[in-house]
Image (cartoon, rainbow, N blue to C red):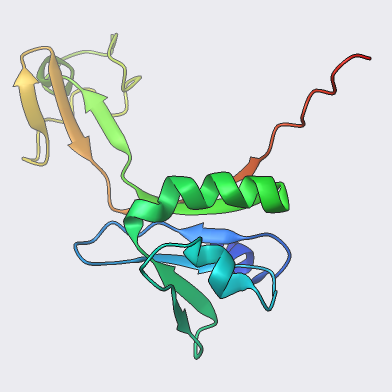
Length: 151
């Protein structure tokens, strides 16, 4: 994990969930300490959350993600979600193979005239794409405040 994401993972005030996308990988969760965390996480389901004591986090099934986020927002008011992503680059073969300096491509000239190195998937003469390396991103989700009913 990158340094700032590691700091978020290690803080103890706001719940954090790490979405893992590999086959068979479970979600990892850190919660502010509470004696009732296991029961709260389980939420009357048959599957029991797994406590990884040596690394101080819980593992829960991927299918629990949305429910966990919704319940954490209700209970804690905010939650960090850490998840993998891959940035998509978009260009076109006509841009990559261009001569001269005029570029009207969405790459804004980054790949203009550079040719193709084989890493691009060419969808058509006007569109090619490729995916960057897998990275982690983090977002803080905050519960919307309840609108108080008028008397």
